[in-house]
Structure formats: C-alpha cells, structure tokens
Image (cartoon, rainbow, N blue to C red; front, side, top):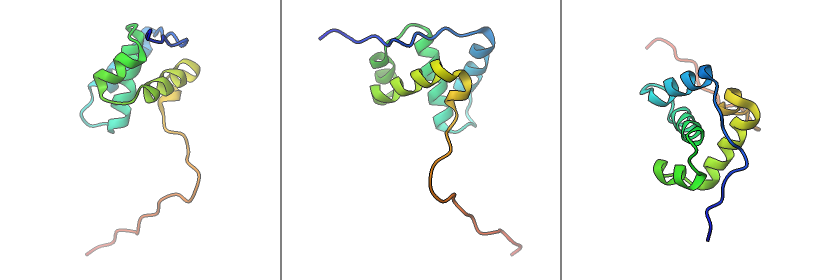
Length: 96
C-alpha cells in the first residue's frame, strides 16, 4: 500500500515558525498546544501524516485534522473551539 500524502502542504512564514517553535519547546503550556505546534512544524518539514503520528504517538487522523485546520486558519486554527453544553463551574474559593 502506497503512503498517502496530504493535499494540505504547509509553508510557514518566519513569524509563524517562530511562534510554533516557541510553543513546541514550552514546558509550561498545556500538552495539547505543544503537540499541535509540533505537528505543524513537522508537516512544514515535509513529513507525511503517518510519519508525524508515529513520531508523536498519536493517530494519523488527529494529525490530519490539525494540519487541515492550520492550513485553513493558520495559527488561529490551533486554538480550541468553543464547545457545546454547559460551561464548567467552579465554586468560589473563600478564606479558610
């Protein structure tokens, strides 16, 4: 079986690359932000979705989704979208 190549070819501007590299190296950001940045950087290097998925230990479909979202929306596409349903509520933290 021949490997499939994504129709979404990623080419980064210098500013996008700088932002993504900062996100990908972060130890304090949420895991999902770091992973998405790494996926896009690897895609920009010309790696296929299956190669990226194997390197990051995730599904090819996940890589495909984030590659497409970045291609269509650039950096804004890597953010979480609002979810349906009731937002989480946290009790107020008071003294004591």
